[in-house]
Image (cartoon, rainbow, N blue to C red; front, side):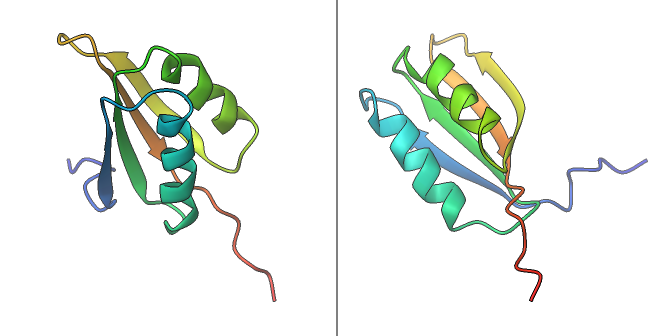
Length: 88
């Protein structure tokens, strides 16, 4: 059986080395340019991103698919863009 995410575009934003609030700001900007259903992988090293990115997503039209701490001590988020389409 095929993976349901296989047809989904996965883009990567490498925000490692950036300090708060830049990982969140760059995530917001990247998501603003994405189509509904596309997925964004965000890599961050700033500990603030662990709470900031999920908090923003809870208030947005996007969904947190997963988040994890990598063996290197960085943070990895996978986000699904759910931007509402213009009904007109």
